[in-house]
Length: 99
Image (tube, rainbow, N blue to C red; front, side, top):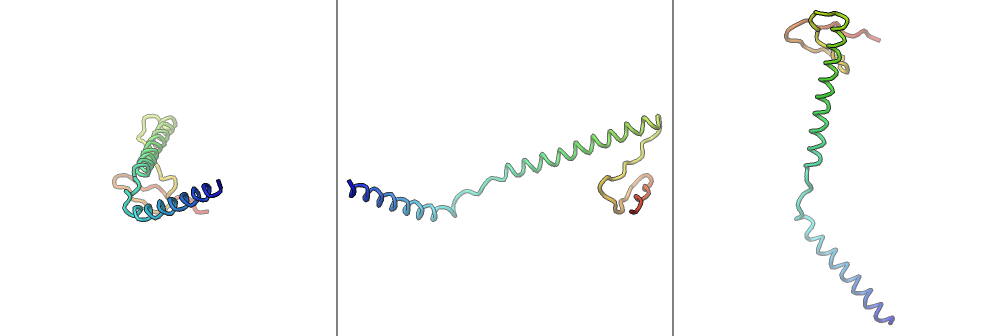
């Protein structure tokens, strides 16, 4: 019985080494991982930002129209950018106050 177990253990070790050796040879030739999940996440994040910006702008317009009915809504200032920004048609808003 003991010799049977030792033989099984030796077979296990040999096949384990053999499998490792074979996969080490094959691994460089494996197909690369897919970029589809990463691209999907980036596309979802981009369109989430687009929809969020559209909703924010619409809320800004509605609030302005409630306070000033019938007037043209001025351009909305950027919320998270305090540097210089150019406007092609229209007035440049005053910079935010310094702290």
